[in-house]
Length: 303
Image (cartoon, rainbow, N blue to C red; front, side, top):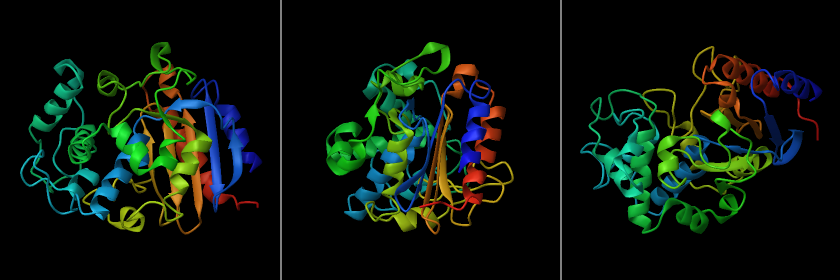
């Protein structure tokens, strides 16, 4: 997989000041590029933590996929929130509301922008609603629930990290997302930190039977590109590449992170960057993800 390394070396210093990657085949590492560097994972938090905790709640009957929760707007279901079609506003400066509790209340009280189940809108506020329900059911903060319910995953990741590479404006060690930062760095939509090797290992758990309802999460697609928490390739500009495996699922993060998984090929591909250190224009990171993830699919793994 030498071509994968060359592409990342060429992008480092132009797309982002720091780039890291890891590829697993059947749980075995077959490629790594500075895989021990620690990054703000941003919205990868949605699948690595919140989606798993939600599916565990569904599996034990505490939540139902096609029913709501008392904290949510009428008509909103767990499935809709996971598939980003509940009608929630995509983002808002909720940090202005005050402390963590106030931010969660503001997210839950924000009016819906479309009727539940009628449109696909990728949304942080929808995942904040999921997180609020999980904390209500579990009687603890999300990080505590993560350690209790998925200890093997939680042990590999952290909520903030002093040694993480810097993001925008030299911000280091604390989450880039304003709302998550105001919530003490622990939120359902962002807050996790980790290196590429750790992210790959946590994602591989989904292929290894460690996460309940994983198969359903990969395949039960909603109105848009999202299945249950996980995204699927959408169009020619997908971060999964132009010709991803038919069963590929993944997610991206605003700071410049991505993870894509192919269950049939038993492949996990993780690409982490701090691209926001060079600004918020997404063109260069989109091109890197598009080409690099496709290169992973095109290379036969060596064991």
